[in-house]
Image 1 (spheres, rainbow over the protein chains, first blue to last red):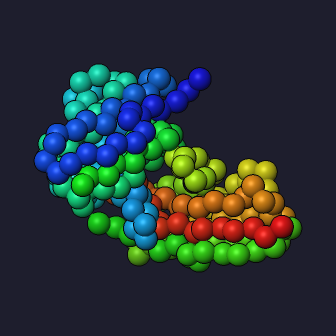
Image 2 (cartoon, rainbow over the protein chains, first blue to last red; image 1 turned 90 degrees about the vertical axis):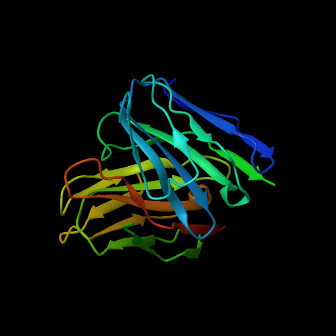
Length: 113
Length: 113
């Protein structure tokens, strides 16, 4: 089954404790991206990747890092999480360039205390 | 970054009624996408539009890519309870390159049986 898998689905942690949210897709998609969703603000793009070893900032990249060492994986790294990064995070992938329909994972709810 | 104005923010309708929502942008887009998000899940693609003036249907859903390339509309005919959810528009600008997808803030649809 074609899917985008995120882990963990839920995480409660404390300020400053490094964390990584993994994202994996099994569709051989070139394009992958991360979004955060906050009430009243909709979905905002954090980072995206057009292909292996190619990453670019989205609209809200501050406080986040990503890597794309393999085509299927696109982890989101919070080196020193802060409470304002409490949010619902979605990973997405698409076949080609960013204008292709994106398939979303089921989300990761992060709470930073 | 770019923003999309999506309206209405929320709607309460009777089962069987038709629904219309729209998105506008101050800049030109060459792609419009419409997604639906159910509680606790990631957005799911409903309709993708790639050409100005394009009208595309998916069951009871119909979406149009505005002639000016600055707007898009989604219509749902004969609504049913499972139409409940948040509908998002998303667009990508016509500027070539790695331009990210921009999302509207969503329209929350409630259907009264």
